[in-house]
Image (tube, rainbow, N blue to C red; front, side, top):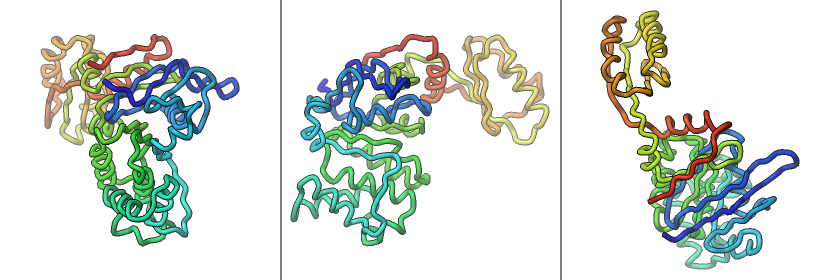
Amino acid sequence: MATAVSCRGLTKRYGDVLALDDFTLDVPTGAVFGILGPNGAGKTTLLRLLTGLAHPTAGEATVGGLNVSAQAPAVHRRISFLDQSPQYYSWMRGRELVTFAGELFGLRGHELRTRVDEALALTGLTDAAHRRIGGYSGGMRQRLGLAQALVNRPEVLFLDEPASSLDPAGRHEILAAIAALRSAATVCMSTHILADVERICDMVAILNHGRLLVSAPVAELQARYAQPAFELELVASQGDTAEQFIAALRAAPWAGEVARQGDVVRVIAVDTAAAGREILPLVAARGVQLQRFERTRPSLEDIFLRLTSTSNTAAPEKVQAS
């Protein structure tokens, strides 16, 4: 499989701070690739190094076979980047900004107009293109950022938290637009919204403290860390009964992690067979009323929390894509 982005021993220091530590990674051509990690994990540093906005302390990165440090102008013609908090001239209109971005890439005349129309349509901004950017909402600004990043039809598109400021409808539109780029472009997307990665990404890399913990297709991660979870949706307003039941779950020898969100309790078992036998008898013994009981596969969030919670002492794992 061809490689669009490659990192070898990529390291970045800011004084005494090690932001990225001996980072090695390959991103296949045409993939929608998710970059996950908690705050301070090194996600933004990685994107800045891959786009030439920062220079590595050690190691190297290539994009499309070009060395980012040594061949920066050629790399910049073939990529685009959307920052997490893009800043624009508020007096410009949406179409003017996207047109300006196209001109910076050398587009002119009919080709420029066609590309601008295409980018605005893809991001749902056609009807608002005549309005001044100063009147755009935060979500519209984010979509405008994506539009100007798409106008040159980049081979590799780097996105830093592209859906972070969008409402559910706007997020749906942006994710659909990103997913539609699959095979036409390689997309490297950093985000803290795990559901977005699970929904549209082919592969994912998980970072913590500047180190790569794991890199693999999402399905392979779920198969590798296949600890089935049990979800129990409780009838609302059970007060102390529900609290005592959850405490009993956490004390059970077969329960690993027990998390509650509203009326939904999620149990990741260390002994799946025992949990399957004993959860419902425990429900009956504690007098808890259930709306739903379900055995589910591990979510990307389960895997993410498991890896980042143990990464201070564990060595990095590298799962090869098949």
